[in-house]
Image: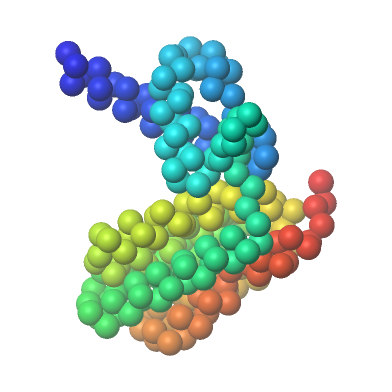
Amino acid sequence: MTEHHGLKRRVLREEVAEYIMAAMLRGELLPGHKVVESKLARELNISQGAVREAIRDLIAQGILETEPYKGTRVRTLTREQIADYYEVRTEIEGIAVRWAIGKYDGRYLDLGYLERCVKDMERCFLQNDTKAMRLHDMAFHEAIVRAAGSDSLLKAWNSLGNHYWMYVAIHYDHLASLLPEQIEKHKALFRAIAAKDVQAYTQCVRGHYFDADRLFTVPATQ
């Protein structure tokens, strides 16, 4: 019974975390907004213990932050922190491409899937569904990291990639004007990976992220 109860608690905790992240993506929880444990427990009709554990998990992932006497909030990043995430992700993907091509000669690269991701990004942009577009964006990059054949590298990427995607998706929708260039950059990334050109891919990926200064200076259009 104890083991079953523990399993149920873990599943609940994961579901609460997914509920919080879904609220963020819908724009109901924005950077700086409070996340109130008791309110969530009432909304979901569950114990505060499961909510507390989910909140701790999201704090550990850097999605939420907490301060004494101020409570828990959706984390707000500085431009320096965002630039740091970009740099680390760039290094991880550079390693992934070198291994995927150098070690395995592209054996684990699914070019058809990567091309579909780029086409889906373009389709979603035309449909004004920028959140879905970013999902396909992340799927593209995750597939490349997976092609490196390294669980450790994939874990390192996941610890950064999901955070980056979520933060940009919920906080920078006013940058829709910059998204067409992102599609073109992903087309260039695909061409480089299809040609097994490690140097070209690395150069492309270094320039494909939004510049952190642009994120903080382009005005919102809401």
